[in-house]
Length: 384
Image (cartoon, rainbow, N blue to C red):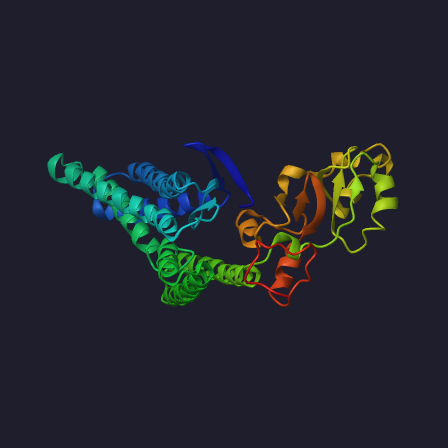
């Protein structure tokens, strides 16, 4: 997620905080200090309420991290690659690969809200101990608020609507029953679109009645609505390319040499690559070493272009997704991050055969792509 800062690691998984996360802390602390704590534990100074409100907001942030960490840890135990965990103003997100079975997908999704519910129960139990046994009413109020917030977080995430965790569980159940992961994903995402729209409507109705909290519900609903729409599109793409190999989708590619100067590359290679936004580059041995874009080349000042090598401005090969010609395209896309300047490079014997761009993938949802590699006997279920 753009705009995120690294905070460390949780069991080896990078933890990041989006710039919007402090807004959540301020929002929660303001509500705690101005309303909840004075009502639940009256008789204390505003300074005490303010200090404990900050503590409570931070506790809930830690709870969000624990929720996402549960997803990450269960995913790693299931053999799913986890990229990172990010906390932001509307909650948290864990970037990971796709589970290979409905069972593992369901467990990975379920453990987040289950962790929140367990933390909620622990918080409410501790609040009862602090209030009824130790008679520490202020601490009891803080723990009770934290407990109920975690219960609400866990319950909300169990709504059967993707991208919420409950939607992932629903997807896993449908996948198990129907045996079709993409169809299950589309159904769960459609439920997410409905849930998101209802949250937006509910939030605006609250705003119209003077309840400021409705803004948060509307923003959350908008996030769910947009994420669900993206998942519907993703499911459509995966259904369209089912049975295809990477070679069926790749395009011929013009390459350049990374040892050339930028000015020479612009003069000699880029005209041959007209219409090709990203150009793979090779080293002295003719092996791919990365990719470069026209904007990156032009960003080098004209006075320095003769002395700067293309390899100095090119994105290295390890930032691209690599695939073999006979790799199933759905398997490749499960691990790919295809953006305008990060294509999928199709290689065999360390030689570049072609590339697949994000535009190529979108084009496959509208019409068949002619095969660019000799047919394989391992491919089934697709014809041109």
